[in-house]
Length: 224
Image (cartoon, rainbow, N blue to C red; front, side, top):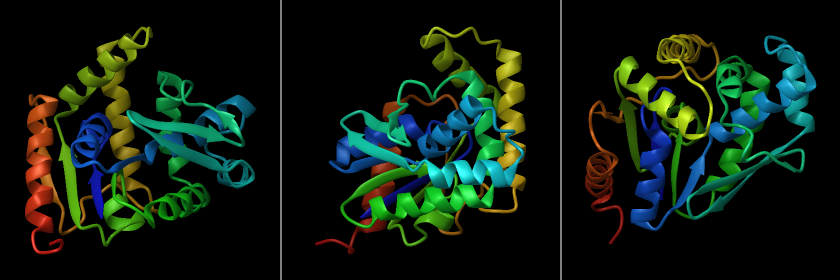
């Protein structure tokens, strides 16, 4: 069974997906970590982020691997563990332009589908319900106001010891929203059969409860 959770940056996808996976006893797949790993590698190699051919070649030559663990995923690219290196503000700013390249998306989507082909998963990203796994039994699209999402991202960065200006984080959120929703390949959008949930001002437990109810409703009759 696949539960697809899509939405923009800072909507709470990863936090809620991890909590829901733990509650359901499912595996958790953070597809955004794959694009972050490619973005990190492009930055490390000094590859221009807008050079589709160069970034695509990098992604194809250095496969990304996700290894599920209890509280998330370990991430490696080209055999190097980058789990602790891909959540910085610098990488966040690079993710959307890198993820817009069709060659990068092809490489990452193929790896994601291979993982999802067996077992039960809660999977979060931008295009799970529309491209990666359109047959997911339950699809949710999380949203929140840009200001709320910026505050969450600022708190996340500061929790990692980075200095984060709220206005700058908000500007980056709005820039990423534009890039993600207007890219030609797999743009950010809700699947027609996804349920939209506004997480603004809601605690994680409340959102997780809502999603658990959606999963139960969507799968009643699918499983005995």
